Amino acid sequence: MMKKVFSLLLTCCIFQAANAQHSVKTTAMTGAHANLVNGLLQANNRTHAAAKTTSTGNRVIAQSTRDNTLGTLTDSSSFKYTTYRGSTYDYSNLNYPFNYPYNASPMFDYMGTFTKPQVMYDTCRHWQVDPNTLVYGYFSTGCANYTPDNKLDLFTMLWADSVSKSNMRFFNTFNTLNDITRADRYRWRSGVLDSGFRQFFTYNTANKLIKDSVYEYHLGVWRIAAKTFYTYDLASNLTQIDHYVNTTDTSFLLPLIEQLKYVNTYDISNRLATVEASYYDGTTLAPYIRDTFAYTGGSTFHTAWRQHQWDAINRYWAPMFNMTKILLGGQPDTVYIQGFDSLLNAWVPATMIKMKYNSNNDPDTMLDYEFNFVSFPATPDFTTVYYYETFTYFLKEEPLAGLSQKAYAYPNPATNTLTIAAELPEQTPVSITVMNIAGQTVSKEQFAWRRGLQLPVDYLTPGQYWLSVTDNSGNAVIRQAFIKQ
Image (cartoon, rainbow, N blue to C red):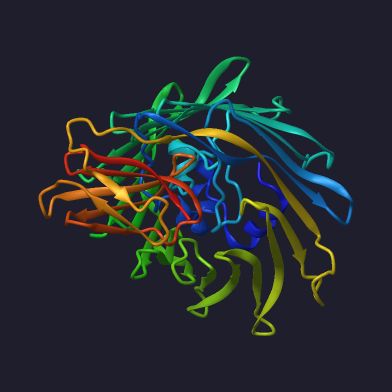
């Protein structure tokens, strides 16, 4: 369900993770590194019941991509919403993620599979060029159901060609803390669910995911297919992922072998700096891919990315891809993607993407230019257009029960910082979460309480957000909507 423009970007920037246990070794070893930035490394999303204050926002309702050379559409989607849920654009990957893939390898699509996508639609219809017939037409429909806390608990994928493509159903189960505890995926044929996967999730006392286990339904029995372990530093950054699977054991009886390992480092602002991936080569866990990320100012999304691949014969990190984003007003204006030519021993242009925005600062148009070995064309090869609607949503702002009414954050609207006022003992551990209007976590930090604690918000794009402050027992201190100017 990904538009052509983004597919081209992914070809250069991101490699797909495996879709099933038996394909992990051949495809997942390349890793979905860029997805790591906006997926696994983000804290679990949380929402709370609250008194409702109405406001308005904009959400994407459709996108279309046109091949300008052929003059035909290549990929389109339409979204329908029945409630106040909205959408959020991903400036790291330059797209509106709205897929629900299931992977037996580490879950880099963490927000989509475990909780909810960045486009929180109820129904999505998708058209694209059929890879078999090369004819553009209706391709699939996705239907999503959510819990009262906006967690994705049921998703159904219906294919236009359901004879050759199995319809799918996904089920998620959550605990009282709104953490996902189990995810199920089943193939759905003639109303019968079969050929399933089941995944269980384990958390530590700090409520961080530390392990997930995947089981496959095999000959009438649930068998362990994969395990993944997650390690964090003192700042709660995900520093290591260890993924175990056995891709050759069809009996599911042999011990699992570590097939993938990711080691991450961060900059002083706790933003992902490097990811080094290793994979099992049949003998040992060997180095494979190294990604480095850079940022401009206080940007929360990476503005430069470079990938190297380990050359086992010559034993050095060979350059592969290089991406740079030029910002205008804090948002990507032009994106340059280069590939490395080993014969010329130089970076060569591959793709140039230009972004346009509407009056609400929402991405409006994406222009994709493909390098033709001499220069970029005067007109874009592909054009993607996004369409929006204005909708009414609820800012979650509620009075404090059992706590002092003097707890609040100011100024509101805010420009650079929010000052948080509350009657709490000094050094009390508190958790401060900022969420956007789609109910997604933008930031989550731990602090030792001090009077007049200040929270930087200058990195936020203008719009409405809400602030949640809880103490170390999980009790609400503040739940307040605010506006970032």
